[in-house]
Length: 285
Image (cartoon, rainbow, N blue to C red):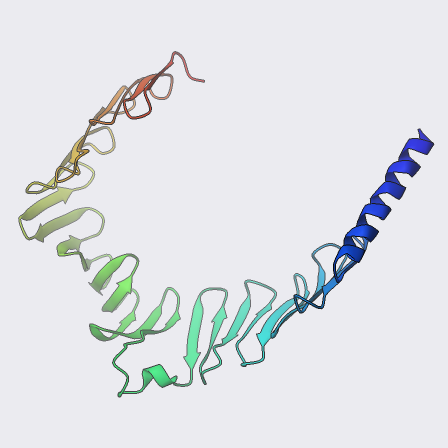
């Protein structure tokens, strides 16, 4: 057995040596304590110690070094750099155009400097964001400048997948806009009114709610999430119908796929007409 292990070890060393000789690559490793790789042709060198914890690497004009999880830095010859200290506690980025940004725990964000693209003669608009999440928000978007002090009041543009959010003494009053759909909330999430082009709806959550957009969708719920029905993607080639009295019965039907579940999640049937298969679970799993 010892001879077999010795033979395999020598064979591995021979393979590494011939691989290095076949090119200009240099490899020296005693993983995970030490690993060094270099190639003059690729203008590359890398040193790792103790697995991923210690790192020094050069790739052309780029250099990376790290003492994880305490410190990490990447920089290139043009001054573009990224520095992490106790990630994700502190992150600093230098964009190389006279601007930089600081993020603290993903909660505090601030940008410094003004890039060439920010100057008035440049037609391209660059949005800016400064925030102390979730309390203070300030920024500049194509819609204009905005400011918000949560929960007292303000306006946000392009936050939380919404084109615009306005609120006063949240959750007392708020209004959101997204792709032409406007939702006014009073005592969110209990009362809401929905409006838009060919679109209307309201909800008294969790008692009852209904909304529809002509030719696009229809939705209703009663004692949410127990009873609800939805007709979705009516303007597509694959409209979908959902009916539920959860957890007793859930049905989803479309030209491509249908599924029925009784006493979720124990008994179900799924038919995929595109892939041509049918699945029964009785009882799952």
